[in-house]
Amino acid sequence: MKMIKQSILAAGILTAELLSAQDVSMNNMIKVGATAGLAVPADNLSAAIGVDVAYQNLITPGFGLGIATGYTHYFGKDNNGYKNNDVGVVPVAALFRVYPKKTGFYFGADLGYGFLLGDDKVASNSDVSRPNGGFYLKPEVGYHNRDWNFFLQYQKVFAGSNGDIVSPASQDYNVGSIGAGFSYNIPLGK
Image 1: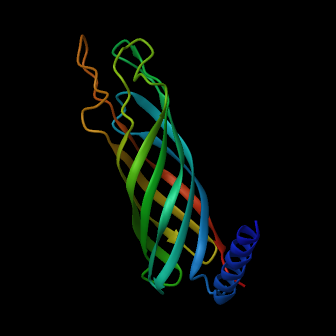
Image 2 (image 1 turned 120 degrees about the vertical axis):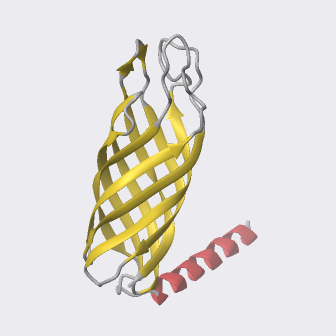
């Protein structure tokens, strides 16, 4: 029990030291935001809404690295007689951003793995199984200032041909969207 208390105390002291070493110059931040978009291609899904959470560290004043996650909900749609189910995406991704100026245009991407959540079947009237996930890509371009980011994005989970329905009608299974979003920057440090 004494060892556990000492470990918790040491972890607390280390955390306090790390946080006090940071400043409000926005070098380290948590980004919290929301997105909305239309599914592309729209074979089995119609629209998407989501929330994003990311940690970013500015390595240089114009270049940031971090990690990103969140949840995007895709709404299923009827296609070729199939009643496609909704699906959710939870990414675990690396983030990079390029900021040419202190305020203004920026671009970047999130790259990682997108976990697909929801019904086990692609469609409620089909026996084809939904894939579990795939390579995740989310490039974005937008406008930033100290507190806010406004952006256009493309989000895609590459699942190969897993989830495709081939008979009697053909339907490729896609989880991707093009849309817009915003995020708020929460500085870490003093």
